[in-house]
Image (cartoon, rainbow, N blue to C red; front, side, top):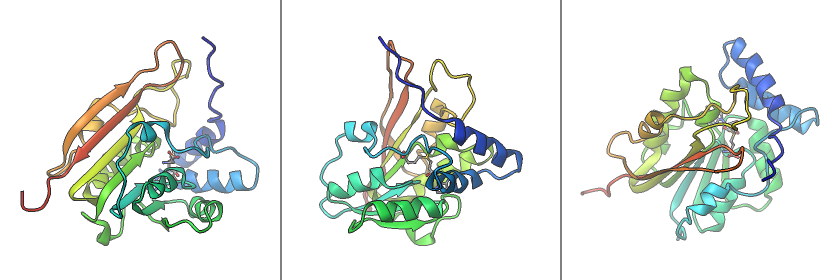
Length: 226
Ligand SMILES: C[S@@+](CC[C@H](N)C(=O)[O-])C[C@H]1O[C@@H](n2cnc3c(N)ncnc32)[C@H](O)[C@@H]1O
């Protein structure tokens, strides 16, 4: 079988390394999006299609229920979830990413917001029927990962669902440098904060390829009064 072409992660890794060396865990995201917009860098995850792993979960129609998309980038998953009938809020720490999302999806029903997962608006607590965390924690360094993981679950409303999609390994031909930095099973389990409990946690293999294996995890919070 032919190996897929390598993900062009060089710009992300260069900027991440510079940012982390300066003690800034997340500043490289804005720099990467801004350089990409200027045509001097490539954002490796910026593809038009929604996540194949999110689509594979086969979300039910939203029917007007609320959804929060964490670290939405230019909006590929937010638009997918909105098309299913959810009222979507999508946020990213990068102002340029949010500008790109708004520009690329004119007339979108998604509310795109600049916000920091590590300091989110208080009003988002227990406010969303569906929360999607896809590929973000894997791009964060160890010092802030536990806090990021603990915060994601706080957004889930009673009766709501949390979806976590993340790298379980990187490419087998990788030199081990990140981002991404794959999540351990213990980190996946740590998303079950408070009364959130796992519905399913699967590790999706890609045998015979150099593609990374992925976590697909679904959690729910009991309905109020139960
Ligand atoms: C690897 S990208 C994945 C983007 C998107 N989820 C996707 O799969 O296409 C990680 C995203 O998380 C955003 N991000 C990183 N740290 C964040 C934080 N503390 N709060 C909100 N967004 C953050 C980055 O700007 C970036 O858009």
